[in-house]
Length: 362
Image (cartoon, rainbow, N blue to C red; front, side, top):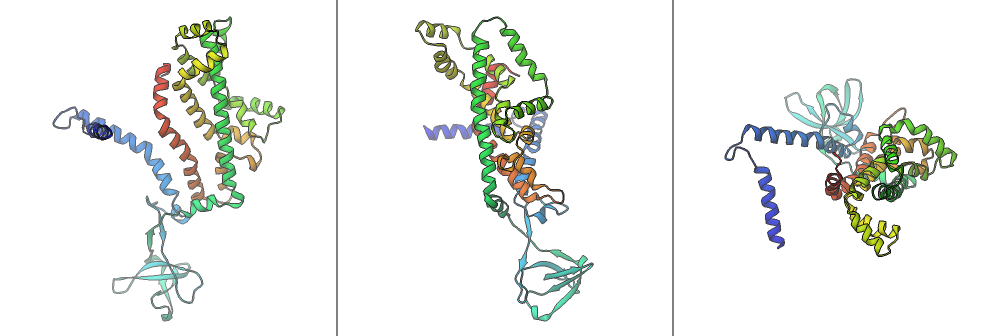
């Protein structure tokens, strides 16, 4: 059965890439369709691929112009009589050939070099315009090792802070939003429509507008510099309440009435009937919460004023100072930061489409 399923999947995939409107030959619509798909693929994935490849480049390679797609590093060689490895360069000879020499130092337009095969021949004076560095393909994995072996393992602390905020905020968000959605979808009480209108009207207010009031409330609660100061203001989301309410409206009321006739409590109905039937919508709310909490930068920047409680997004700014930017570490940490989200999206993407489609949100 597994072989048959694998063959069918392979046949379906090959058929997907060979589908054409013109049957035996490509129609103009086929060219336009495949061209649009390829363009979309390049627009979406080229920046990601560029960041990942650049995270394996050295700082010198990143600052080269024109930039290279693959990571390269200058080749070095150990020369007798010199304490450190010298950089290799290709130098044009008088007979039109090319020779590899090691650079000792460079002063203006003059490069002082030595032949690594015959260092006893002495130093050579070469025009700097006639030398080109010898490069080799080199993946600078030391960018990641330096990042992970930083002093006091600060990267692990940033990872822990980001994970704590993301997981705790997502759990509270799912529970609170589902309870609000249950009340708004299954209970008839005076003011329910007004409450729903008030919740939805929050969608029209930009998040940056309420940053100052949020900071004042968090400050009054004494949560500035505390991870809970980032978690609590974000657990109630109007989008989550609306999405879950729309989904719970599709659950038949007869199930709830039957449970009440069996003397089930309202909490038992919510926990044992409503939540299991709302799994696709809950997954969508959880995914949205994970994405927003993990990538959140502005609110942690306001609340978390101590380095011990920095998240990964705040830690990214520490590689940029007034005088320099560590592009190699910055790009490697950006890759590490985006990796968990990519994994979550790959495994849970089907819940996004099914959940959004079932709630009627366009």
